[in-house]
Length: 89
Image 1 (tube, rainbow, N blue to C red):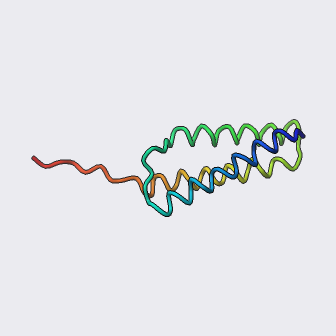
Image 2: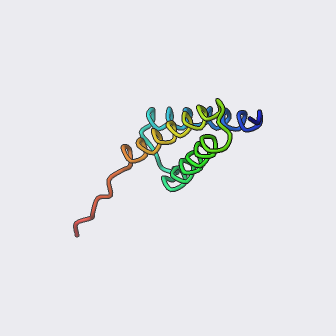
Image 3: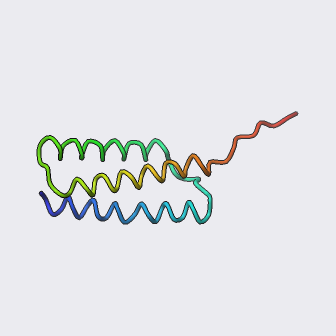
């Protein structure tokens, strides 16, 4: 286990609740990128796979927790995404 890996995941883990709280409070998700969040999720999945296959330790919990937070943020993105209304001419 690398202490720096744990610190990185803790820092990322602190930023997602801020994003989630802002989305819930304002119901505005403009500026968020679902593709970016999905890429982050994929990165966490790869980290979990690495921990399971090569270096199992407690840091896997941080990967799983962070991934769960990103998934919540993705759900909120689609929940609060404004509808695209067609204009009738």
